[in-house]
Image 1 (cartoon, rainbow, N blue to C red):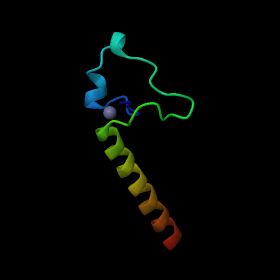
Image 2 (cartoon, rainbow, N blue to C red):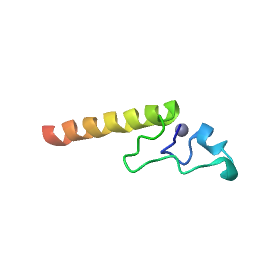
Image 3 (tube, rainbow, N blue to C red):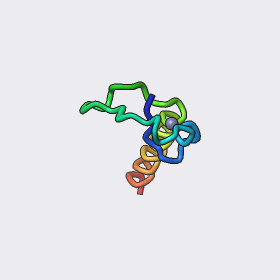
Image 4 (cartoon, helix red, strand yellow):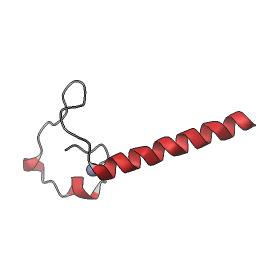
Length: 57
Ligand SMILES: [Zn+2]
């Protein structure tokens, strides 16, 4: 499991010594944390909304 948000609540529970370099060169070594994935989706959706708004001008 990996986190790409530093403020992810479950990511913050991982103590420093428990951390391992989880990501391989492709970034696919571990599945993404569900919370981080949800935030990713949310960011993607607002990016798309922003672009649609910009293009409608
Ligand atoms: Zn996370």
